[in-house]
Length: 245
Image (tube, rainbow, N blue to C red; front, side, top):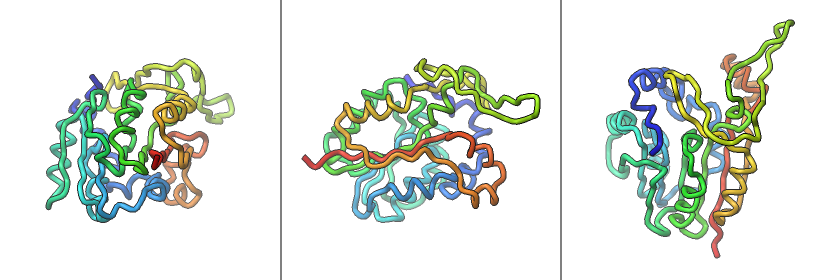
């Protein structure tokens, strides 16, 4: 079963302080780039994997999606999503993505933001998503970049001059990584970028776009805290499509 770190009170409280928790999609600096990868949502069926507070679910509904399902392993996240959502058109459900089942050819878009790097069995998930998508349907997701997840011990290093660098080590060694972020013992899965891509291809997907995202100069000027993100990609964005035939 996927580690349910978001129901850890310390983690949940820490996560609530992030801009992406307070401001929603506008608080996620990669959102503008990710939004360009999305298909037209009008009348579509959408599933959000790791929906968190439900920000994207509500965006999809407000942009014409007909049926939206938000899935998350965290009851605390789902309670927050339900609290912040009014009106119809969105169903929130507690689900372990490692054991996900979806009806065949029932979904037009599967979306996920910074959730899939927690999962160990990505091949099984991609196979499930492929059969669930209608022909021509899309998978659009973001995940932590392997350059970011690779080090067995994460953190900046500084040389004698004070120049910072990010140690990229153990890149070829795929598997679990443990970090202390808002809470001790947070489990994430490191896999090479080629592994992400080749697993998608093996599942039948056709790649549409890959973005090793980094902040623009304008974003750094508005939020100086993003300056370190220009040194190496922290996340990547990917869009893939199920072929029509």
